[in-house]
Image (cartoon, rainbow, N blue to C red; front, side, top):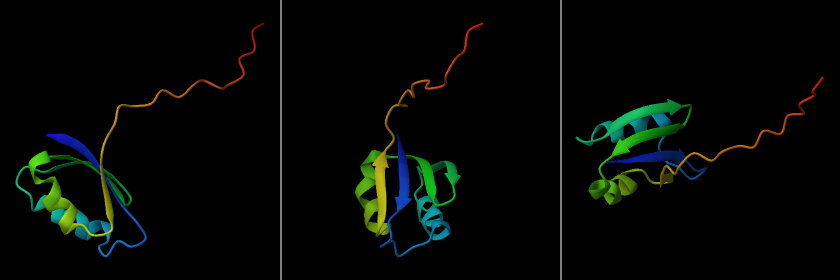
Length: 78
């Protein structure tokens, strides 16, 4: 299983609720989180091509490792 991020482009023909319904139609799929139009799912990589075909206009990409953000705050020492 892989963690995938799903995001619509401006050419997406389905809204987020319809896309979620399609994802739930796959037996091994699990929706881990949804923030507005973006979804994080746990998905079988063998069915990845089928998912992309059923979600025209959506970006389907694998979630990468977290990127550390440098601390840019000014710290004043007494």
